[in-house]
Length: 505
Image 1: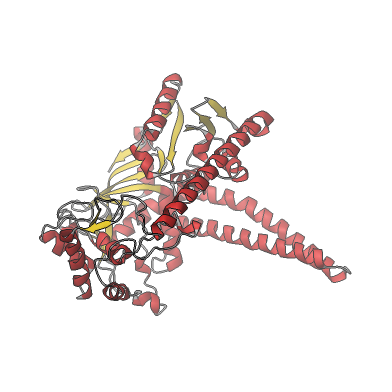
Image 2 (image 1 turned 135 degrees about the vertical axis):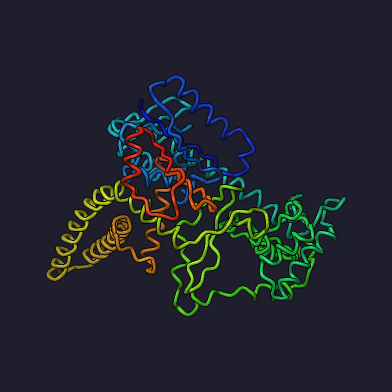
């Protein structure tokens, strides 16, 4: 059977409460019913709350992961990418939008838009009608996003203007406040406000965020979402930075691009500006960064990939020092909300990197890296030759203004190309080097990049010293040992013998 891959996206997290995801999944199910010769890949790429207008999904989202898998040859020719419509792929300007479609098609992957049941293939790139259709859809989607953005900016500009004059913008407000009966201001909920003040008092006494959260949980205090004894260090840190406690309305990161300014006095303050300022001064940059001797162990190669099998929360690092390697621990253990034990980081990293990251990338990524480097190298030679010709012409030409501009342009393109080639080589070297130096910052960062391109999730069984690994290409490895060496070739042999994309160790 042939494989189909699903890609789902919507722009804002508010849409998660609506019908968008359900509608897209229904269209996928209906297509599969009418195309029984295809099966749906277990890996579904989802960008929930990432905009395609600014291209965020293609930089840090699941679509970026999909394109990495395509570039590394992990998605085979003839695979079909299922999307609701082309505007799920991109709402950028026409050049960027059609470029994303072209990149997928040139890799031998067909794109099916489920809303109108149109199939785009590599041959569509030579079909003027298909290209015109794609361009018109891209133009319409970009114009819709631009108009929505303009309307939203105008509406919020009016609200901010009214707020500066003393009118409340919205009934939404911080946890320790409520809108008054006249709906023209806010009242302080003293019991909740006192909890906030106690956080700042403990912080100013030198207590860490972890100790503060433990103290509040022991006292049975509600967190900012109204849940009892569920404070954690991250929520404490965010709270200590909130200028709302001293009365400021701070625009969200989405509004900063529209030059929105803070509005002082919008909320009633619940503490002094002096105490708030003192709390901010307690943030200090780590000594390892200040003195230039950055500790390479601070780079977590598997950051964001590890989850605790017992409770499902993130697994983080603890006990890191210049001499010590540290431990992996469930983020809920420090809050006494999970019983998962810690596990040594040095052994975990050693066996995951040597047995999994290097092995998987060596078999699937090395050929891709060489294939990627080959045209880049050819283009580099071509540009370098052109630059030499321009330089020779400058030496004899009477008017060199235009030639100098051409030389400048060529130099810039060569520099950009060299940076791209260096990145490809770095990933290739991380994938294949047996003598990977984990004390080298560049090696660790390259290895981190490779791990993210290969792995979707690592589910940690710290007590058993094993983990379940889910790769972006759909492969699943259960009970991968973290206390002994396993070769990647033995995993592939087991999968080939069983004829499955999963294996139990």
